Length: 203
Image: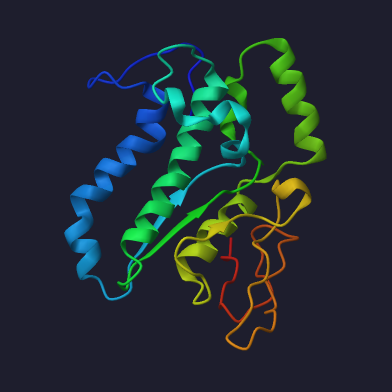
């Protein structure tokens, strides 16, 4: 989420970063003992392609000097990645896997809250050209949560044009050979099975 104007949480933190990153960080800290006791735990953070944007630099994380809605969003999504990489480093000798994904671009109910005529026009055009479905956007999360081939510290996203939609790229198996990934052409219908045993749920 991102807000058109800068607001703060009850703790005085910029609300976009607080909601998209710091809240999840605090929750993970609370449940960490249970995570560590699990047999094969995975900590999966959901970032976004916006993390790569130049306006997502973390030198003014709370946007105290200058607030831009998408800038705050990009910062929160970059923070997700930084957190995951540091967690992967700190747990490198353990059984925990820290992963971060981005779902690509998808048409969901959020777009209806876009402010301004130009924003609505741009959203309408990009929806037709590059955006995928909300169902398809769930694939990277499912892959990260279930595939036996993922490695701690991986950033997993769709393999479509500019990583805006599609399924996660094929991962090599233990012999270095590429695996067959599931098809993502039809949402809501059983897909071809893959070595990761990922299949689309029945409607």
